Image (cartoon, rainbow, N blue to C red):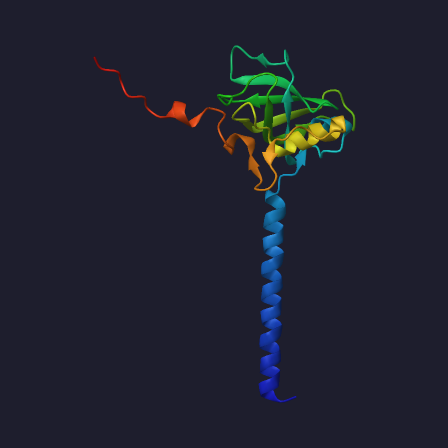
Length: 183
């Protein structure tokens, strides 16, 4: 083989190996940072992995919120209409957190056994919905799947914008400052 060809072949092989290593490292890094979403029903049925960082969400079950008076620890139950799971969170709750409202959290599922009653979701971060019309898409999809129905129009399908960004129901005239009356 010609020495120039041999050098080119070696260069191409090194380049391909370098790109392969870079892709493998990128995929490994992405795998470590991906948080899969699981509904309360999936967590209760044992479909969610125990001890691995995941995302979970649902509607806070009314009457289930219990606060520890000596710390910032809060426990409550979330449901998607098909299953329930207990959530444990230590920290300051979001301002918009309340019973009967949708939340999404990031954390780990703990417990032993496939269908253990002591299974609970230990959240590191909680996000609450920000108005009465918006529901996190993952939570809405899980609720729709549990009930076997399609929910009401939550967004403008043509532009994929949430309903809270659509037109205001307040008339435009009422938003304009009114001139003061003078005598």
